[in-house]
Length: 263
Image 1 (cartoon, rainbow, N blue to C red):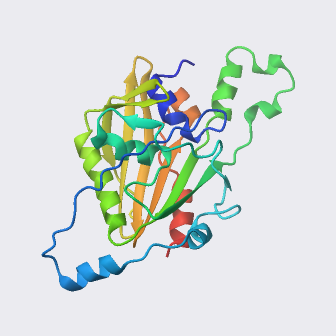
Image 2 (spheres, rainbow, N blue to C red):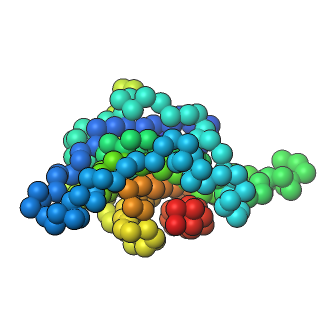
Image 3 (cartoon, helix red, strand yellow):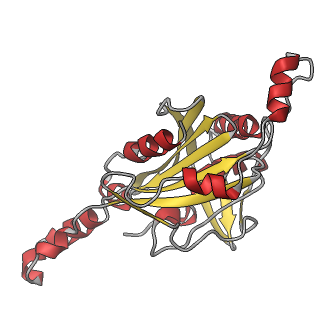
């Protein structure tokens, strides 16, 4: 199947056989009104970021998400200056879609959760078993699994609120679509829309960035959740669902397991 440049740019971020594209340049979404409540302002200013060791203990680990394999992000995390949106206002969306923590975190860490499904081609005893179009169906089914990149980031002061606000502002500002570039390769999303979030944490938002081509809609899904001064960013891709035009969302079991560790 010929994939669009938009999918190559970002959708492949969660697939081990393809390169991980990450971006940077997130806006802080503005500053708080200095005339706000003295106690609230003081509390936010006093909020301290977690240490790297503390954050490592909080992110999901092997055996903690039923039905999923959890491990390091395949391919690692490349330099954050390798990918950028053409319009800086849309950078926070690429951040969320590709596993970069929005805003200016003091520390962050990531994991990859891959849905553990049996490969349907394992039951085939010969190529004849997969003849007459069954081979393509089997390939699609073998790739029909959610792959979710989870990034936890801890912030000083009200940095987590600013980071989440930057993503929210970008969803509105970039609803008509945006383009981006990774190592000279350009990609495009034709529309962005908010979705119903999981409702976990203190506040959360979810969105879909879609590239509409002659092959149909190719959507990517992301959610950002604030737990105090920690942000959990989730981005999910399901190549099999994209190929078969089947709907999918950010993996609910992954969000549930991660939220439980942040309570």
